[in-house]
Length: 118
Image 1 (spheres, rainbow, N blue to C red):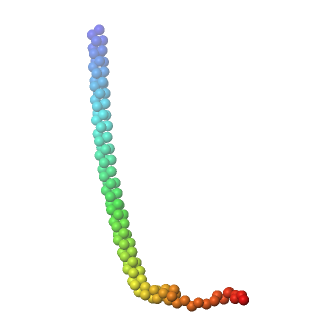
Image 2: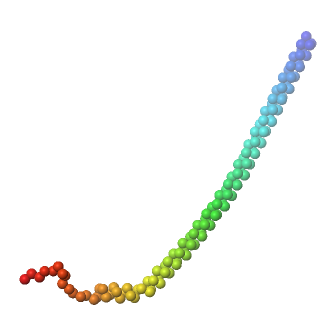
């Protein structure tokens, strides 16, 4: 009987050791999952920062180009206005003379289709 008791005791101890090893493995698994989650979050943050930096660089390049484009358009507009103003000042007197001569110099004539009925 004692050998049976010893066998039972050994089985109980072996069962306890197995249970302890199982709990320890579960704890290691939990720690590893937690560590993997932290690593993933760190990697995501790093990737996000990298992409934001790239976005800011592209945005700066595009906005810088738009700023240059805006300056070019403004310069062209100023040049066009200057050109039109000089053309206006050059031609205003001659156009006024033509306009006044057309309006004021009237030569009455009978229209060729007019028939005089007596």
